[in-house]
Image (cartoon, rainbow, N blue to C red; front, side, top):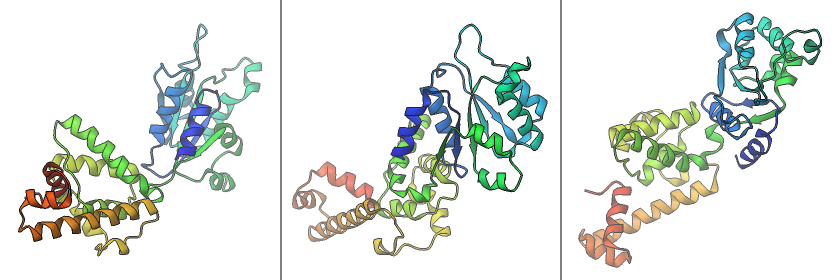
Length: 287
């Protein structure tokens, strides 16, 4: 992700076209807007064009209506689901992008293009479903956005971001997640990627209880017996999960020794009483 972010920042200020490749929900439109904001045309609106149901004439009108005037920077156009362009629209787009067209007095597209696809366009080219010339024209800078299951170490940070976002929007306090609840999130396959995680975060804030919000995930996923059974690819996540489990066990043992006198348990654990209350809430035994 750091390499992707670096490439986006470095190339955003150029006029090179971007092709964003990734499964649904991996953040292609988010990156399209980021690239546009960092470009010379960042102060102008980003024009989004859905390629699924558009005719060649409509596509031509959409692409040419914002031609730069009076020294303005060219607009940025976002072609969403570019793989859905039919062969006639592909031909029209190639014609607009072709430098030779301008010599004959025909309209030429001067906008900067950012295209997005969830398909393998190289295979589509080989199968004859996508024009090779168009593929190379829109693929100036190709960014492949990984699926969330390939970057699970980012789940805690992304979750914190979305919990804070919806806590602010809805005016509700986001509940703290305990170790088992976080392990449930990390072990989930996330077929809907970041969009699915965002929806889950909103659900957690709305319900006010992570346990209720995660019920569907637990039902769909194999039961987690402990950190050793988690199929976690990231050492950082494994270390955090093990640390949370160890902390939980130490707190419970201290409470048992002090007959659940929380002030004495806090003294024994060498933490403040307020810190112990927060940690009890985190591990789901606040009451």
